[in-house]
Every structure is written in structure tokens, then in C-alpha cells.
Image (cartoon, rainbow, N blue to C red; front, side, top):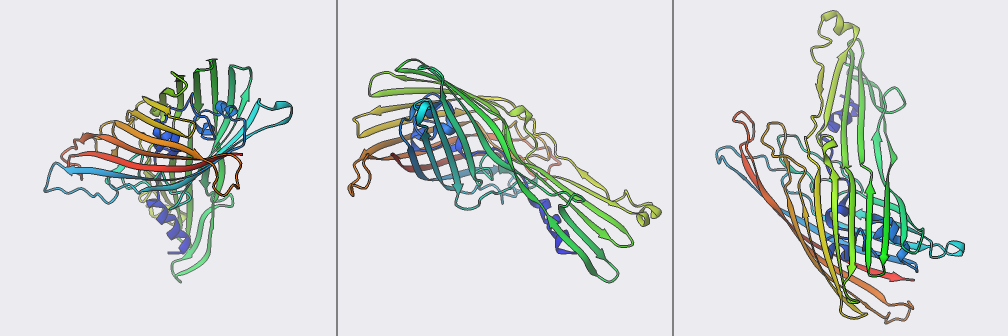
Length: 442
């Protein structure tokens, strides 16, 4: 078989993962992570480009930051039938290792203190974009197995309408991987089986830009009390890889591999932040996610063998295959995040946070689906401190933020039918990690 045909067949084992963004999973920046991600009304630097673009206007100077993060998931999966093992080749999610960068650029001139532009970027160290989903007979962690390995880009603007009201439009950037046979794309091979000669072999696919809008609003009725809300449109990375293998004198083998990768649901976040004293701030967020429209995380495959010779023999339909992906039956969720920051002095702050994230994934008591996920309880802590530049290169103090995180994915059980290839099993997991960031206001 030609190289192009093999490419198409290899694509059959390439697949899609779940949640698009690593930022909702672990947080954007140590301050946010340490406060449980409760930032919809409290983000005060470039991380607002993700949490609520309307808050970008809070910065009066150019703000820049760079961070490094590491997270590891420790799964616990046990078969309830010791005589029937589980294929656990995909049970261990990859470590999350990556860097984040961001900035806020307040616009001067006639719109000074009225308009600020922000950008946030996350880059994994292992792969720019990874598309991964195992076969349905192999259990894998829906949120953690592949979604963390992709770049993340958020762009937004904060616009101050009045002294107490600001709004923030923004976009999340992803892509579409698509090849089109007959339209100048996809995989094409012309094969003469009798001479075992490949006459034509082509492969053409494009990774095109895909945008999802974000909109935030911030209301400040009192200086010490703030409210915020953010809406994020669903976003995904569709993968379409068609291929045609022309078998001279026999017919055409048409293949089509389709998947939806890095899917995130429509989401509404709402929060409040209260400066109880000049030193102490408490923030609370709610997070509604519309998971019920989620596509299947598994690959769909279509195979069509057609041609006049095969039709004359009456076997042109005998080898056709249609394996559509079944919707996963997810449910909508409502989670909560809580954070606090105590500013000991102008130089030092201590932070604490927690979160509850319900799972959208139903119990996997069916055959043909083994998506691992559960309700998660997260805990975090961190500190922030600043100091003058000892080299006197920078005029303003340098800010350092550090956070440590832990999450417990509560245990569940998958009760499988007796005819399933997998036994019934139990599963749970722990996640731990942290991040450190350097920030500076120019």
C-alpha cells in the first residue's frame, strides 16, 4: 500500500480529547491558582484576558508576566474481576509541563484609562497540539489525557464605560485540521495492484484558524465590592481526514476519519470579590457549563469500496463500514470556586483557595464507552512577594508569585455487562502540582 494510504489508515488511531483549555483545569497564573480560580471579579493583571476581559482596564501600567507550571495525575484503577485484566495503557495521563506568558497594554491618548488590550498564551513543552483518544475499550481520563497538550491563546480588551461599569470582548483561538479529497486536499493514491506500482500519491491538509468569542462585564458599586460575569462560546478542533485509494481495474477505496478534539462547552462564570479590610480580600465564583451538547470524544470512521468491477460482482457494498461516534450523554454542571488573599504588607501576600467541580460524565455502566472522570475537590495555597531590582535595571519592584495545588477526583465504579470485553472496575485519582511566575509593571 502507498505511503499516502498508510497515512490515512494511521489516522484511524489518531483521536480527540475533551476539554479544550488547560487554563480552566489548573488556572492561569499562580495568584489565580492559589485562590481556587475565583477570578471572575478579582483578576487584577493580564490573567483577566481569560477570566474576565472587562477587568483588564484595572491595570494603569503595562503589565507583563511569565510562568512555569507542572502538574501530575496519579490514577487509581482496580478491576473487580482479578481473572479479567484491564487494558490500562491509557490510564496514566501525561504530566502537564508548560509555560504561560501574558501582558496588558493600557492605551494612552484620548482613551487613557478607558481602554486596555490583553493577551494570554500557554505553550506546552511536549507538543504544540496533541490529538489523542484511545479506543473505546481502553479507559482514559476525559479531562486529563490529551487536552493539556495544546497551545492556548486568548486575546481581549477592557473598555471602561463609566466609573462603575466596564465590559470586555475577547476571543479564544483554536484551529480546524481538514483535508478535502477532490478539492485539492486529503490523501490520494493511485495503485496498480497487478504491477504493484503506485502511480500517484498526494497528501494535502490545512490547519485553519478557529475563533470563539468571549464577553465579560464588571460592576463596581463600591470600591471594596466588585461583581463580574463572563460568557465563553464553545470551541473545538474538528479533525477531518479523507483519503481515496484508486485501485486500477477494481474500484476506489474511500476512507474518512472524523473527530472533534479539544472541545469546551458554552460556559457562564459569575463572581464577586469583597475587600473585607484593606488587607483581606475574599472572592467567590460560580461556573455553569453546558456539557449536554458535547460531541463524542471517540473517532468515527467511514469506509466505502466502490467501482464498476465490484458492482458487477455484487460485492461493492459488502465491505462498506460506517462507524459513527455516539453522543456521550453528558450533563450540564454547576461548580464553585472560593479564594482569599491576605496582604501582610506592601511586599508580601498569602493566598488560599478551594473549588468543587462536578463531573459531566455519566456512570460508564455500558459497553463501548470508558471515559474516566469524577467530581473533583481542589485545594490550593500560595504566596506573592515583590522586591526592588538588585541590579537597578528596572525602576519598579519585581513581583514573584508561587502556588501549590492538589485535587481529589472522587471514586466511582463502572459496572460492565457480562459480555463486555472489560470487567467492572473502580477508579479515582489525585492531582498535585504548582506554578511560579515573575511579573512586572513597566
